[in-house]
Length: 320
Picture (cartoon, rainbow, N blue to C red):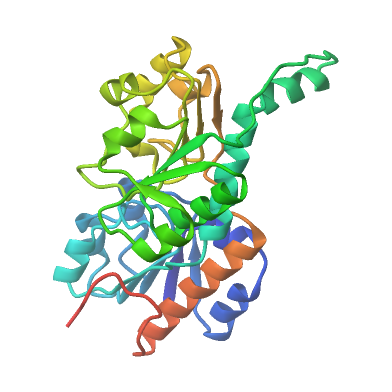
């Protein structure tokens, strides 16, 4: 029987037709609760035909150990920075993924974090629950400038919502969609530095690469307004956590709202868990019933199609 290693918890926990897809295909499921580090993945591979994974560390060593039985790696989600796509391609293993399924949900999450920070939601709500009637003065987002770093699918959805809120929108992206920018009144920034230095709110939506890792650090934070806030619904490693915590605690930046951390789940002493004016959510920006069913259905379809010799809906590498 074909065996599938299923590690993504969103797929497992949320009901929907994606479960029936795998059941109808008569696959044997090997269940684990990810995201798993390389060492844990190495213990599980070797006698499975496919991975249906989330943010597990799928390194060259993991792929090599999974051979010759492994036939496909189906990523639940978009980001492929935890998958060694180069090694998979060299070893002729297709890597599929799910673009275009979570941009609505993630962009909504960004605005939840934005409004919570600017309206002091967490502190006031927690005080009220504790019996304290603590009334703080917040800020409107009308007329505030937002800088979007990475104007892809999610960045565009953030821009659409920002325009509806009456914000001034700037963005930086190497691949510029002039038609969209014109329609949504998005100003093209010449550089990331321009965004950092001029915007009240900065929203990160770029891929994690060697050049973007720790892009928000002590130096870049020093360029920003002291009343600026940063939102991160992309990858935790885009931000240097120690530098961010120090800036927050010193009042050099007004707030940080993030759905992602550099280590997930974080250690209890992670610096951002106790930093001032910092809201951390547990990587749930795309975890809505609607989004999960779209992602899970696409991930399952990709996996089944490749195992049946059909083209995937979206494949990240070319295997000949």
